[in-house]
Length: 155
Image (cartoon, rainbow, N blue to C red; front, side, top):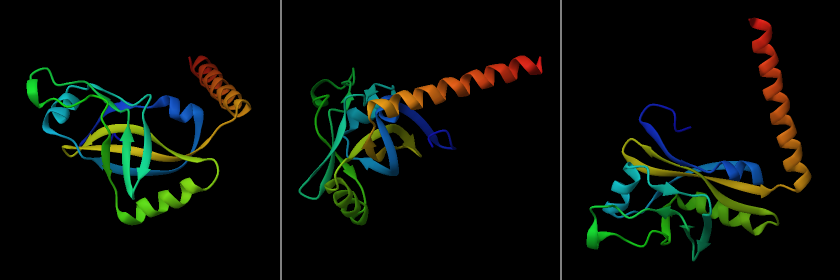
């Protein structure tokens, strides 16, 4: 998604695709302060250990690490603070209903700029079992081998 016009990828969570089946994808804005946005423009962000939580009808991203801005001095906030995600009420209600079902969780997938605004792509996900992970790795290896053979046959 972030490779379209006006979009620049900041952080990607490849591990989420390995650990979960992604059923639905939503785009959400984030409530940030100025120095956090400046730090994100430099690409200083990590969402590997982060997760999404719903508290009192509001959606938050927790443990998203944004490095403090070098020139921000007293205006810098805690790098791991809880940040509010901006979604429509109908989307929040849908997410609340789905996460109450057994096995569903919400994970952050990507952080990117879209027309100058920071966006987070979140996914409604079901956890994979170990055998599912092995199966997806085997498919990936098989696809890579087929592409390699195809390239050899062309030359």
